[in-house]
Length: 408
Image (cartoon, rainbow, N blue to C red; front, side, top):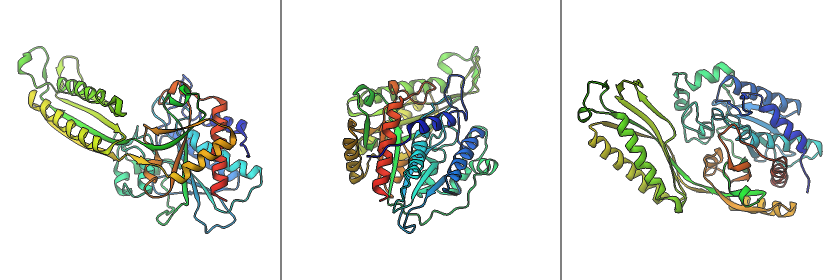
């Protein structure tokens, strides 16, 4: 079986890691930031140098096409995202984009003309760290989120998605309304410890956990910390703290069922040392492989918040911002991944993704599959995120041969 140019792929990864590089060798490349623009511009530059065509849709998703022998055949779609978390890693997302680019460049090297076109996509705002919700680009692409609603989304400084797309020059005009790929692929670092722990080369991603994300606000009464007796307070901070403990207990009960409950972001207002917090805002997410369990946990969340608001005389608001059901990826594509791994002599195992990915949105619209490679210590969303050269190459070889087979 044919193999990629891993030296070139490693250089691509190093080059893109310079866009938003942090002191500890990580990356901060938030969606639609100046650093994101630099990465996008260079991605398009490399694509055009290789004689690939480029299109950009209204949400800023970038589509690079390597033409096939029969342009009217439905294409193969491959790719991932280019944005990162704050103080994130240099492989999360971008490895999938650049492994796809390397596969297209290797097809050029081998002078292979595929029958189907191959489209390489860099999705907009997968992380959701600057603009919520996460996986925004693929959500708009699949019709799960309207472009009008996406445009209105704001970051913490009140800057909108639309204005930032226009500022960095990625408010695209290309229409993908009737776009119907033959299949979609995404390769990604695992972001967990299972593959490395089991000494497995390739993770065949059979499906993904369902996810519910919430924004919760508790309103009490801001008052003087020195003059307000303990039994006369309406302390939103205490309410939030108790809610966090209760939610954690909820998650601990789901360990054996692979359920996860996380409070990731908190904010107190007015956030002053000598003022009782009058408002608490925090995020909550739950993940589970079973939809009935997600529904049950959803009811428990509302019950916990209601009990705490009554206990501390607080007003409570809960807004669900993400609702993704558990999913199973396409069995035929998974079978081909296994076959190619076996032919290449790579160890493999089926694995369920605990993280959300753009492929989760694509899965209901087209045959979709994901491939994982290990990452050191399972560490991700962290500056110390890392992979080995061997894992990098093996993942690239799997993806290249998948594209070669599907596009032929």
